[in-house]
Length: 158
Image 1 (cartoon, rainbow, N blue to C red):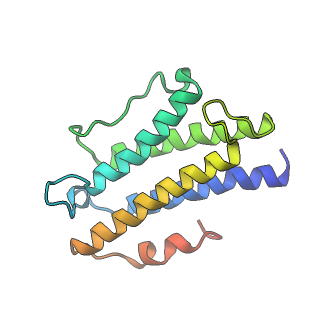
Image 2 (image 1 turned 90 degrees about the horizontal axis):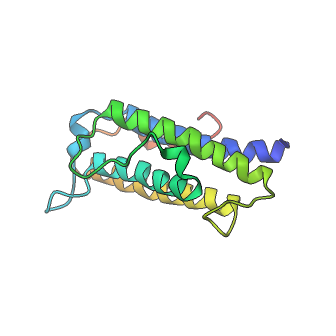
């Protein structure tokens, strides 16, 4: 792979490690925090949703890739261990999808715009939810460590 292609793949993994930085600073109790009056949109639900969107994109690309996986349902218990595991597994599959797309001149089955816009889609979606999660944590009184306030912006170190 060319240095540019390796940068594209590394960009995906930096995004993933940013998610792990967030998960690693949480407590099990923080997963149930929400600003919703109806009880939806908990921190755990949003992290599960990030994984689910990855799953659905992978399923569109090649169902066999997710044959041993399943989505996280709203009623499922969300734990830090479960979320770390599912995020790690899906990140490696997305990394392979990106690698395959780069090897196929940017073409990706199930996403007509190509591999680089697909990478942008993932990062855009996941950054949106990270922002929502950080705001929820802050509004619910969770003490945000500097690692979450500033560390997620230090891409040369992530």
